[in-house]
Length: 233
Ligand SMILES: Cc1cc2nc3c(=O)[nH]c(=O)nc-3n(C[C@H](O)[C@H](O)[C@H](O)COP(=O)(O)O)c2cc1C
Image 1 (cartoon, rainbow, N blue to C red):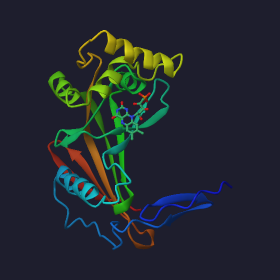
Image 2 (image 1 turned 180 degrees about the horizontal axis):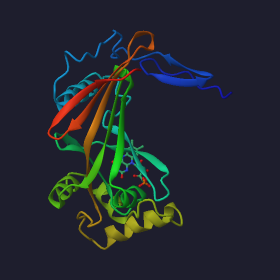
Image 3 (image 1 turned 120 degrees about the vertical axis):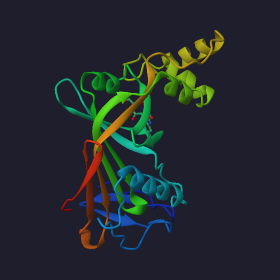
């Protein structure tokens, strides 16, 4: 067993030693038992997601997590699941948007199999949201608009990085950045870089409850409306 250094106060740390313990939860965490009831949730899951997302941001006073970070799962050509973290950049009734390199592994996987799962975990609220759905490209205008909000350094990195490809070493990437700068090229959105929108078919909201008798409510799309189901924890 590896001994971990003591965690600073106001940080949640999860250590593994046979079972998971919650230690020193930050004071902005929800300590109450928060019910998630069919009678109280809106008929539109986007509305509930918006409420939860806002709370995840507002109650994140300790600032030790990024509430926009989410796990994105795709499948590869052999049907193997592949997961990684990306950042949620916008959401509305159409779906959940993230940005990436279209020629990355995830980009190739989504081109071949345009379906994905997302997981957001907000431990300070004892909440998880799971999304499954089909995936489409956002418009070129949306990709360019977002790209142009990024700091120059991030734009250049996105331009020179052949995401997911094997490179000779870090030096090769740094050289490519320098070459881009020295050539005085503009940092415009590459043609193969942009956004994806995960269009939800199902969204599950999970609320941690006492004694692990957690609440799970799953919205299932039914044409233009949503059905609601309770799942056992
Ligand atoms: C907190 C965090 C946020 C990230 N956000 C993004 C993102 O928004 N877009 C992206 O392409 N990669 C992002 N990454 C990197 C991905 O996890 C991944 O390494 C990269 O996209 C390559 O994945 P792939 O080879 O499966 O395509 C992020 C990683 C972390 C840890």
